[in-house]
Image 1 (cartoon, helix red, strand yellow):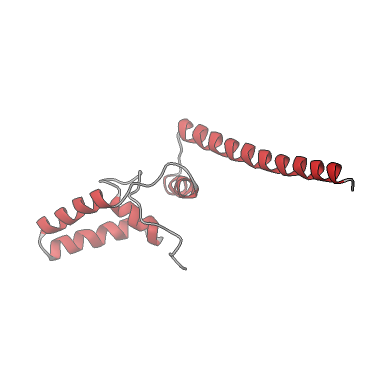
Image 2 (spheres, rainbow, N blue to C red):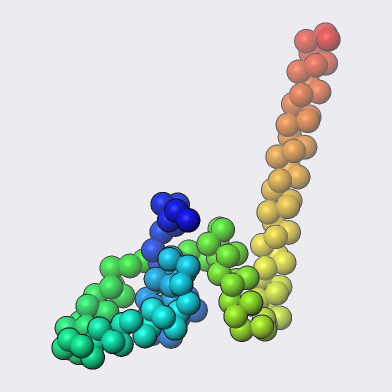
Length: 124
C-alpha cells in the first residue's frame, strides 16, 4: 500500500494531543502498537527528551481538518472500533452527506441545462 496521498495529522480522537492516533491512522496501524512503541522508546532512553519531542510534535503536526475525506474515513474507523456513535455524530454525518449530494445534483443539473442551451442556440 502506498502512503503518498495521505498526510500526517494529529487526530481529534486521540488521548494526548492525538499524535499516536494520527500516526496510527497515517500508517494504518493499530493505535495500541504505536503507543506501545512510544512507551518502549521512552523507557529504553531518557523519558524527559521523549516528552519534549512529543510536545514539539504536538506543536508542529497540524490537527486533522474537520471536513473532507479524511474526516469521513476517521468517522467510520472510529465507529468500527468503538461500536457506537452519538446522535450528534450521526446528524452531522447526515448533514455532511446531504450537502455533498446537493452539490453533486447542482453540478449535474447545471451541465444538462448548459448542454440544452448550447443545442438550442446552435440550431442542432
